[in-house]
Image 1: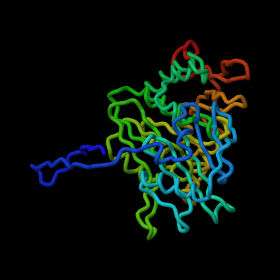
Image 2 (image 1 turned 90 degrees about the vertical axis):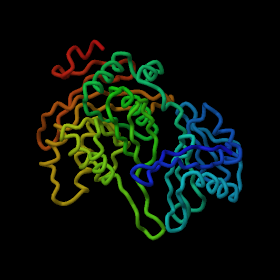
Image 3 (image 1 turned 135 degrees about the horizontal axis):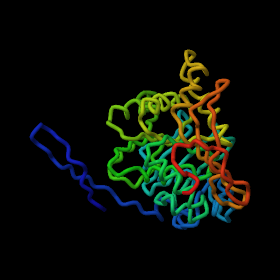
Image 4 (image 1 turned 180 degrees about the horizontal axis):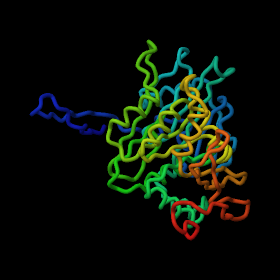
Length: 359
């Protein structure tokens, strides 16, 4: 057993009482049971269970079927033990759960009748959250020149959108970018599940809240973005833009507040198109004619990342949002682009950072 001291809680204006909280330290072998070896294996990036007889892991960006065979009871007990740490639930009325585990891993579970027969479990381990841009460059995700460009872009207060597919390294890159912010800044992060761990002294992390058993108490990402603006932020970070919260983020960035986020898209061009489409979900009074100039003026850089067939994660494109728009589309120009063998400098010539191509 381990005793932790919680933050002091005021009972009266002049009285502060420290509260002693006793918790049991997580035992990996007990909590994860039959998959504990995979959780302790530093080469395993993700574990997923399609059925008790089909347990997969990912190493180096590539998936492999393990020889582990479970029972249906093993799978249910595993989920029950893990969810004890998350404070979230799963049942017929709420057949999905998305939660963070104490070690920082992300859990996602879906149960029948949403799935055809078996419980489907994904555990995504975050092995590279502490890596900086230079570390990622040394691992081949980018060149030193691109690392320097991104560092200077963050420090100058540019708004950056990281785009890519699932498991392409968006969150890892975003975490490295946020960590480059000046240390005197106050950073507010907003996520569905806590994943970002920027290496900064003044960080407030917030996550959405799902409804309770009565269907009440939900706090969506749009509400968190609005609340974050009341918390004296120097920079706002949205873990992933999926729905109508894109509108609130664009409005915040357009007010002069620097920020960053991630989005699922196949290219920098697709990311712009998607970011102009998602705000339309906020209501019928939102139009493309309003969104196009908003996107053009709110964003500065789009960084496209990709999980390649050999398992490597690489930046494939760094594009500049010029601030111009035409035919209800924000205009972008390439700064760097991966051609399959090397990075080619793009056509952009007026990017605000002087001599950006020199790194």
